[in-house]
Image 1 (tube, helix red, strand yellow):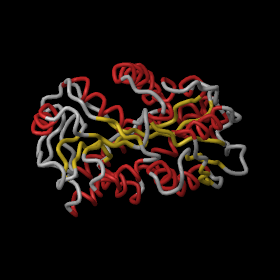
Image 2 (cartoon, helix red, strand yellow; image 1 turned 45 degrees about the horizontal axis):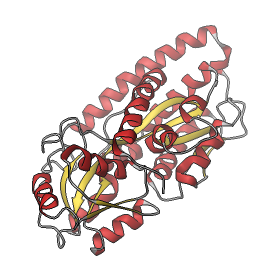
Image 3 (cartoon, helix red, strand yellow; image 1 turned 180 degrees about the vertical axis):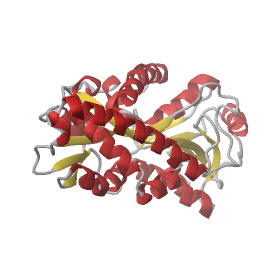
Length: 332
């Protein structure tokens, strides 16, 4: 039922966009033309195998069919995604170079690094692709806590005993941990790693007892019993962990954090091209492989027009500026 509801909602949005596109086509010959590219490149600003890379490669085949030109994925990792993000921000605004970006690279890093380009100003939002909540989890051999309340009790009893892991300072996983500390006046030492993979590995090994991670990555380890979930950071319970309460339910008002991902073009990309790309992305999200992958990730339904995604980014940017300031997060 949920799968059908998601597809129906996306189909309604897509139908609206198609009619809008047809209306634009009547007054713009650009719409009917193929993009003037040898190929469209989707830049993933992280190494192969991560969520952004998976999502980019998920979209590429259907986008290629819809756009009529080859669509390739190019990994440009480094500097917490800043290298790939800046590369797209400096590219020609012709729709041929795109970014599969996320909240870290687009709206968080601008508050932590001295960037040469502000991603919010140098990028044009095309379409949101996924929004995946985090999970507060513990190593069950190191902590007996089964709820956030029990974890807080343990942290208050032993204020200098516990630490939490993240894939790096300024990541959503780090900021989530800092918000727990700030909102409940408890202490945990932050242990930053070079990526979420090493952080998770050390929590499973028992070197660090506490962390946040996306549902996408954590689900296999929850099923194996290697980690214990305490709460999710979604607004409502996620269907992939229906028995796990939210942080809001657990006494953390307003504690809603999702790792979101979307497609961006360089700033000043012409509107007909923006709409053409948006349509291609949304059609790609309806492909069976995309529906299956997003369901497994526990992604929220994020089908959107380019304007809706633009409005979303405008609201998200100041929220994350406040989160960074409240957390006191610094780049190591």
